[in-house]
Image 1 (tube, rainbow, N blue to C red):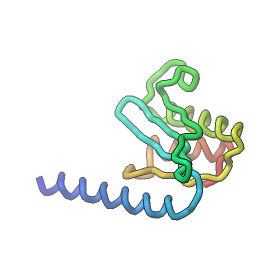
Image 2 (image 1 turned 90 degrees about the horizontal axis):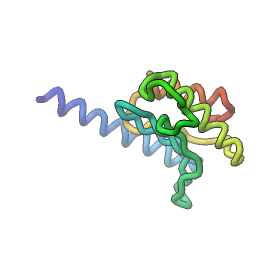
Image 3 (image 1 turned 90 degrees about the vertical axis):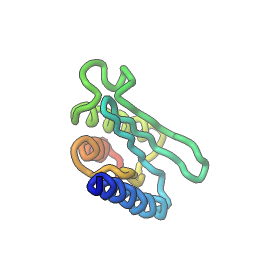
Image 4 (image 1 turned 180 degrees about the horizontal axis):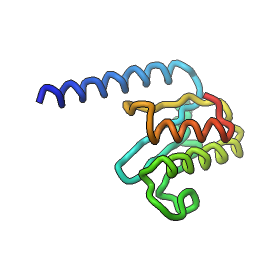
Amino acid sequence: MKLIKRAAKQKERRGFRVQNRVRSSGRLRLTVFRSNKHIYAQIVDDVAGQTLVSASTVEKSVLPEGHGSDCAAAVAVGKALATRAKEKGIVEIAFDRGSYRYHGRLAALADAAREAGLSF
């Protein structure tokens, strides 16, 4: 039980640390939510309180077939999000990974978004 509580506390602290760093940057925020079946990403304007661009593996245009829970799906979401953001003129953002560690699907999504033209 101690291990579970300690891991939950570490995840909470990591989330606060990332949140403080990202919110103080003053840029638009690329938030990521990762579930067991899908991955969702959106670019949020905190000042206006709006979602400007979003992409996820639930959309058939992003992932026509296959699983939404692997690194290839995360790369597809990153590319789709970056192309949609560039169409709206968004280039500089801050990557808000929340309480997730930067590896696996999150790193694949971030690398794909960088390669497609976003800078963070």
